[in-house]
Length: 102
Image 1: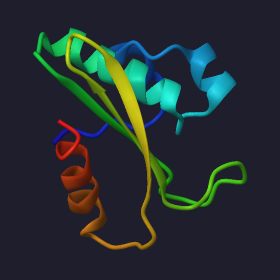
Image 2: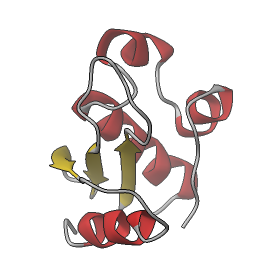
Image 3: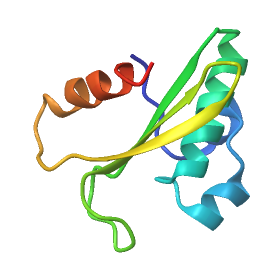
């Protein structure tokens, strides 16, 4: 699994609009959808998947909120989830949730 934090690579490599991030926040349904579409396009894959994650306290988002974005070439959609907890197994748990959306 590859991870990409919010910043220029996130915007450049995956085609996420800076305006979309400003308007919706990095952890949002809209950003998860655009990120998944960008992953699919950039990799030439049949399916693109992305996860946006609040891993630190954020004043506008509940702790543990994340979105799973999926682009299967027919439609792009995102699903909201919430994870309460910390630890090394968090990324694995989030990955399982994301893969179950396929």
